[in-house]
Image 1: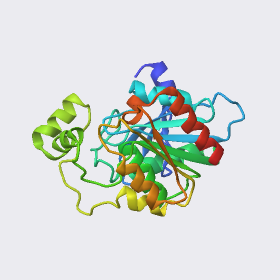
Image 2: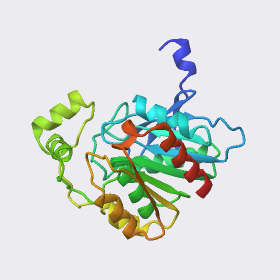
Image 3: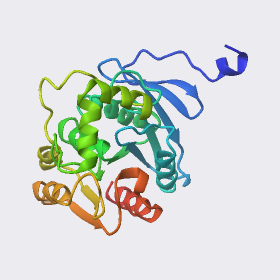
Image 4: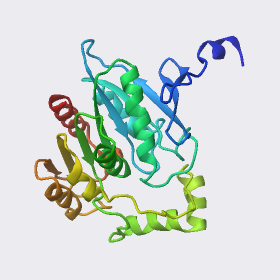
Length: 267
């Protein structure tokens, strides 16, 4: 390791969630089960911002993906932004459990936001990440507001062609090879032993402001999914966005800006 590289790495702290730095803007977190999680921090453009937004990407996303970086830049207009790669994605360790143990990854990112000096932390998740932010808020808490974008309401849904393809990727050996090579996503070959609480049941347990956002052109999950989430959480807010497709890849800048404004105003 050359001198420049050494100067960018600090000795790991032994406390549970405190990271060691990979660069001034990136760190390696450790989830509660010991999995290493690659995370990045984007400072707020407003010097007096007091809120941190932790962004949970969709399946096959990662810190390096342009769509996630674009979303982070929009959120940074109002808040500090933490992005991270779920286990099995990008430069994080481990294998994807497709929404189950990913809650621990989000916990680590929320904890890191607090070590950066933000007392108020909110979360926004896209697709699989939307399911994870719902489950994390319901089961572990510690966040002031939640936005779930393009999230499923229930597991094992195969009512659309894209979801049938995704199930093939996750459930079949050849599909997992395609996931690893084509999608850069390493998937756990073991099925869930205990089925995680479904997102719709988690939504009913969320006791902080909740925003559900979905596109009427979503090719993965039809509108009964967001409507089910809304019905489960009567105090939540539901936005059905005309022409919007699926998750961070399709989210227009004006929608990201409105989600950011909602999160920071409800924190």
